Image (cartoon, rainbow over all chains, first blue to last red; front, side, top):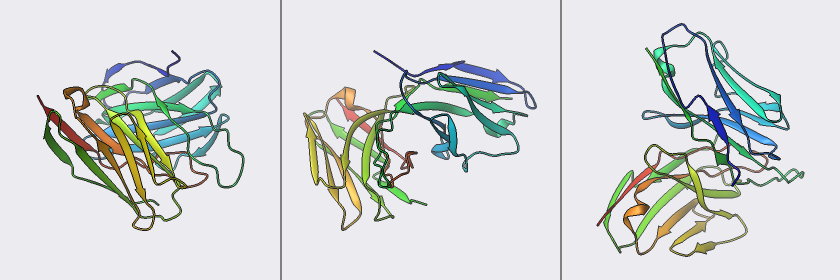
Length: 120
Length: 112
């Protein structure tokens, strides 16, 4: 049963420190998403990759957040420097985008277990 | 961008009753309408979805209905069980946009 994996599962750090979260998408999937979940804001998109190319990172604070896909099996989300307001659960999700037409339709996204981040 | 509203925000039912959650969206071009379930401390998981060329879809005790004219779709759970207790999110999406815009969630509590 293929699943998205994320590391670490929990992270406690102090304000100003760098945080790196990693995600391994399901083998063969070509889309990767980073979402952040908080009680106040709910589930928000941070970044979205297709075939390793970033397509949408408009939800991500550019001054401190960065998202990359060094290869097809690894996606990373970095926060530098971290702030208390970054405390949240960060989910990675992957999917398989088969459509190539203009009117592409959505496909199932498979979520990882999340990284619970606490910035003190 | 897409504006998504879910109602109600919380719902408590007795075991065996039905539950209905409604999701309203703003962009008439939306063509994909999934529902995700998130149990406490767990990841969101897709439970059912529907595409714009279909009005209703059923999967055992779960169904989704779509009203494109009114721009809303609903999740129906029949014969609810305690394990249905969770937060349910709708996430309508636009053509060509793979990322999901989630509703604020509905917390369903099924009382034994």
